[in-house]
Length: 274
Ligand code: ARG
Image (cartoon, rainbow, N blue to C red; front, side):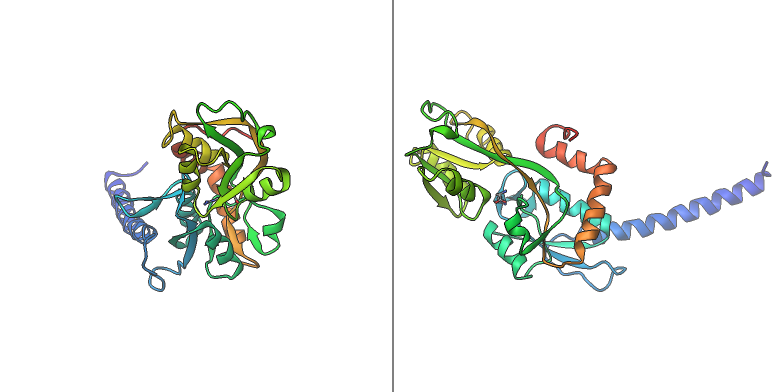
């Protein structure tokens, strides 16, 4: 079809355009990677930088890698992938969970991601993305605990959880006869349980399971069923224009397998179709 010369010419054009494309995309990657502290707005082709509020310790969704100084976890990978897909940059700021909730209400941050359950009450003051993770609550006790087999055995027991979470609400609404102790960080609650200072901890299934299988292997176990199905959503100040873009990007990542890859990395298996 082509003469030798013509073919060579086409090859040359192809090579040139590939080279050009490579330059373009390495630029993109360079800016997409800045998830650290610098603002980085302005220069690179209209990609805005948004502040993302997250919790400082909620394995395996967000936690500090002490070697690198970077926040890691399922939520972190997900929000970075969403930002890449939607074409914006993120600056991650970690804080206490309550700070993420109030930071949305006061519009202090643009986005919040912290394993935050979508509730009607929160939805009055916060906007949520479409759900991105199915969770629920569960009880943890010491490995040799026999009296507490399920939530039916909580009367008169000391149950610890983290303040400002759905577990605190669940306990106060469903277990008025249990003595509820709330902690600013859940790890303190787990450690008190390991030390026998409290009888049980109630918290989000994925976090309890992760802690029980890793940090407290052999010392703690879960009991009873998953209580109250919950769904996590990405949070925004009320009226945020980002909700739609984030939902679109999330849908794309679910379709193209990126969401499943991230899920598998942190939970060891691909999500089951729901
Ligand atoms: N899902 C629960 C809630 O929204 C607990 C979330 C805790 N998240 C965290 N990053 N510590 O209330």
